[in-house]
Length: 206
Image 1 (cartoon, rainbow, N blue to C red):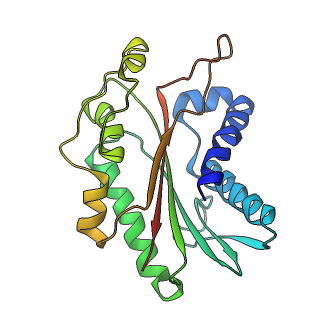
Image 2 (cartoon, one colour; image 1 turned 90 degrees about the vertical axis):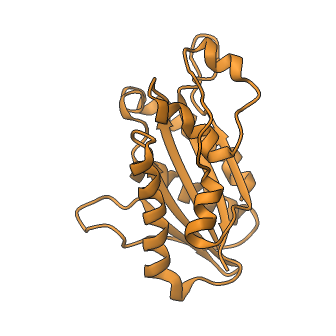
Image 3 (tube, rainbow, N blue to C red; image 1 turned 90 degrees about the horizontal axis):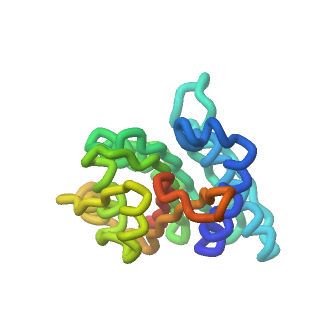
């Protein structure tokens, strides 16, 4: 799983190169980021000699492109929820909790003890207070390289709420793995574009 997250950073870099203007306007669509990560998980299963199957979760109306997926194999299932944090405000964060709740309601009967739920989210950091707080909300701490964010005009702030606490309050569960990344690099000097943020969390559902 962790290997998939790390390799997914390279996948996103390639994806962004092909869809550069779109990504820089609004981020990668939930459908594209969800499908790309599901394929990365499939490759990981294959690398360990396990056949797997990707199927979309029917949690959205039929006219929408699927953004949540199920990657099934004989050693367990990875459930995947993708979520684009548009403003990073409380409404966006509640919507993520609602996505998890809807998944649990819809698929609770099929969740096995070894199954994992992975959440993949992305966001363009803006000058708003909510946007500056998102990384702290997700990780529970600010990154060490805070000066490098400042140099790119980004003001990171501490959040008065925490993703892990919200998960515990809503579902009585803690993430077993959380990570953030900046997969985009500037073509001139290969410097990370820190305004584009991806967030990952892995939950082992009981």
